[in-house]
Amino acid sequence: MKKNYKAQISLGIVFMILAFLITIQFRSVTINNAAVNQSNQRMEDLLSELGKQQEENEKLKTQITEYEASIAQYRSESGLAFMEEQLNRAEILAGLVDVKGPGVVVTLDDAKNRTNGSGIEVNSTLIHDEDLRRVINELSAAGAEAIAINDSRIISTSAVRCVGPTVLVNDTKMAPPYQISAIGKPEQLEAALNLNGGVIDGLRVWGFEIDIAKSEELLIPKYSGTLNFRSATAVEAEKEGAQ
Image (cartoon, rainbow, N blue to C red; front, side):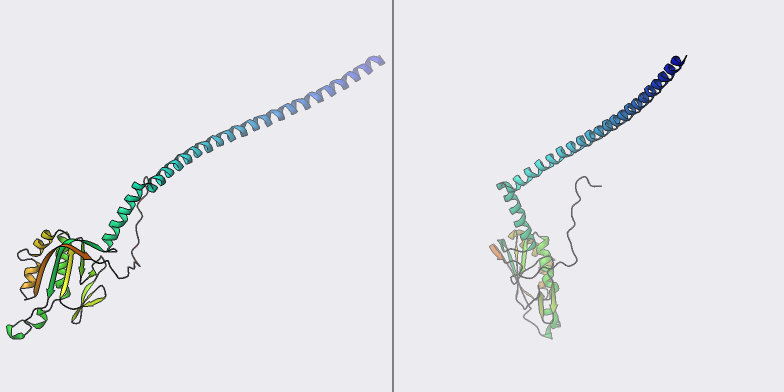
């Protein structure tokens, strides 16, 4: 009996140890499986992120290729010629370079008869700023590409106004005779000035001395003043695809 009892106790202890080892083993396997699953999930996330980065890299490579092609085009002779052409055009339009070409020269002088005997006021026999502006506007409307008064280039910011007995053009005081040079098609410019009832007809009524001469080649100097833009700024073009 004693031996059986001891055997049972020994067997019970063995079963307890075995159960304990099995529990530990089960918990270890569970933890390992969880770690493996977590590691697999992390690996999938990393692979997904890697794929996104590869796609982004491909897009950047495509953009770099496009930019390199654009740079190559600008560096090519055709690209430089195009840019130079656009720059020259902008400088001509802005009046920043000397220009030459066919056109007309209009000379305006005060009326010779300045007495009050004719009943005309003396002030009406003088060339005023508004008279010069009318001629300039008529020439511009007729297609003049460059205009100057007594070699002072007229640009978008030029002012023509009376200051006492003189006329101020681009901050330069001038006295008659006034010589207005305009580059363009000579016949077209002359015809516009000589329209019946036009600007020249209106000036001749007051007895002004007026001469219009066509020329095969005129030289009009560049604007010699200072250009300052304090309020106006360029508006950037909207990027393609921008909302």
